[in-house]
Image 1 (cartoon, rainbow, N blue to C red):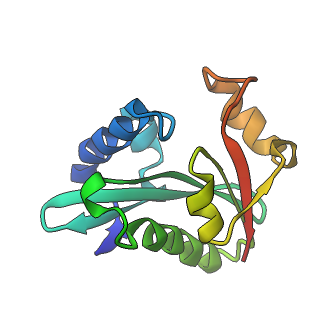
Image 2: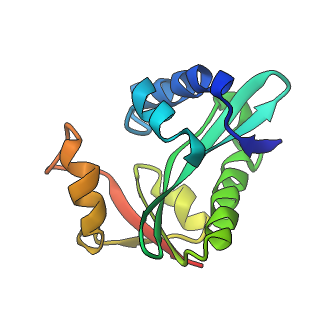
Image 3: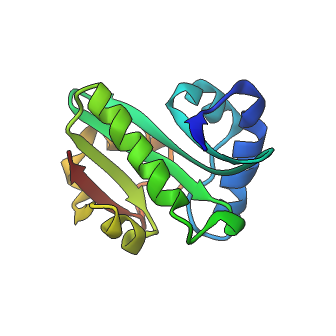
Length: 149
């Protein structure tokens, strides 16, 4: 089941994201970032377990970022990640947003979800709001991707 995150989920989401980050699959998120942006997040729930998460973060007029997409090992290869991406797409449609982008190390997965590789320079709002705070800036090794909806 996919639903919006709840306060009691945040520590589990934090653990899930940072476990994936420790494996080099994504960048980490702090608890503060998760609480600040919790309205952006969806979770995939299996019983009492948070088995996946992802967020739609509105950046600018007609532009939103799919961020922090992460699926527990036990829930992979079952459509969980794709379902989380589609939850973000559906929410973007609610807000009449037609461009979604992301920065990722998981290029093949997002290609299968309808995204295409693009240049980071297309997203100056992202670079000057979030990326400039990243420890990897300006030597970012993530791939920028976009999807028109």
